[in-house]
Amino acid sequence: MPDKSEMTDSENEAEIKANSDEEEDLVNQELENLKNDDSPSPSPQAQQNMTGSQRSIQSSKSKGSRNSVVGDSLASVRSQSVGSPMPQFLKERLKVLFVYPLEKKYECPSCDEVLRYPVLFEECGHRVCSHCFETEIKRADNRRCPTDRGKIDVDSATIDKEFNKVILGLEVKCSNHEWGCKWEGEYQQIQEHLESCEYGDILCINDCGAKFQKRFLQKHLDKDCPKKIIACSYCDDRHLREDKKEHIQECPKIPLPCPNKCDKTLSISRDELDKHIEENCPKTKISCDYEGIGCEHRCSREKLPKHYKSDIINHVKFIYGLAMQNKERLDKHDASLVEHVNLIQGVDRRIGDLEKIAHNAMLWRVEDYTRKLKESKAGNLETLFSPTFTTSKHGYRLCASVCLNGDGKGKGTHMSIFVSVLKGAYDALLKWPFDYRVTFFLLDQNDDPNERKHIKFSIKPNPCAENEPFLGRPRMEKNASFGGAKFVRHDDVETRKYLKDDTVFIKVVVDCDGMSEP
Image 1 (cartoon, helix red, strand yellow):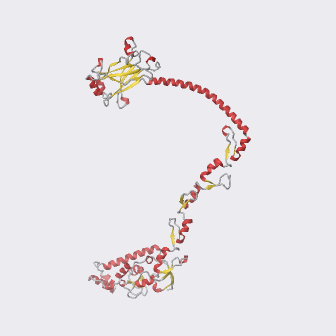
Image 2: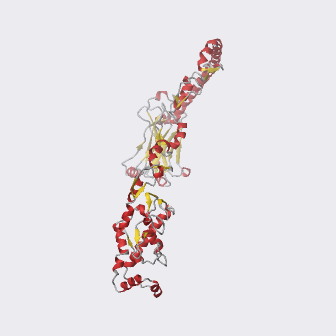
Image 3: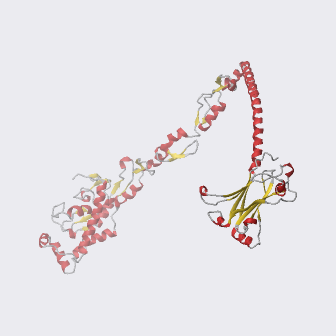
């Protein structure tokens, strides 16, 4: 076999990792079988196929003892493996460059690779790597040494720890030697070196997908990595490098030249560019200030003063024409204003009349009806008086009164209601005697407004001499009352919803148009 200075793996990396895991599982399973005293005996046919050592081991199991040779073989393999854990670079077949050509004694005759954790055969003294021992030799029906094809007893095979130390001490080069790494050291140090080797391939720490030598990491991050967060040199916005082009197209602080090319040396930030064009740029085309009155001239901002100087006569004509138009409009507005004033005065008078009419009604809330009716029947409370009210702002001053137990013909059976004319501050301006119709309502409080049926009583005063004490201008605080003694029966009050929450509502309306009042 020719000397080899470079060992390469014939299997892909995923398959090597799977085989290494399988190897460890096989070793564990074999040791468990050897230690299990209660395992079933093999069949007669299997016993015929056993070697002498295997039959001896099986015989020892049945007697409750273990052959000492076996105890020093695979048992020692297990203890050696536990005491000296297999380095990662021995489990995974790394690409290794030896400084000197690898001697044949260090090669596995099964896989032609460097021996990894060599297993020594007691019968012939040859060695194979532990991986080949577990995956090929132990699984073979005819277990033979791959070097001389002699029969072997796998149970007597042991890990050659001393020979393994020699292999681990062999001088090797870095696997990245061809890329410029000058490191040399012992085989057992290769894994530690590769973890820190600056010439080894790594993936970008920002997950951009790039692969490069470790020594180029900083250069990649500084110049190439699309996933690195960078800061805009104009606005300090932070974004991914791959988004830089998009950001530049929108950056508000990036300096831009004026699109009108007013100054080739001038650069303005994007957010100030519109203001420059609208307010300052001398090349921007704008309209004449007199555009609103007829001038249609447009020119650059820098030429506008010349236009004002040369077209001053035309501008004066525009101003004169506008003044004449405004005069015509003002004349029309004056005529229209007179009409509006007259209309407003008429509306004002109408509003005054409405104000007078708006005061011609009074709504009276009588609470605690049951108690007050009881007191009225007992003679302790004859009459209840409402708050005073007026028919308009400056109209008649009135007051309503109610006898809950009735008065006159209605006493004891009806509720009686009356109204009195009171002395007011504007009586001297009012028409006397008082002769306006007065209407009384007992309001229905049904929840449905469409179902309400109010009780109504109306009286039209007769302004004759006999009724002067009732309808004439008051000489005392108030005139005598007039109204209805049989306004509503007591039984009717209790029906429907006239009485609700022990409360009744009485409404008094005076049909006064307000036109005869001041």
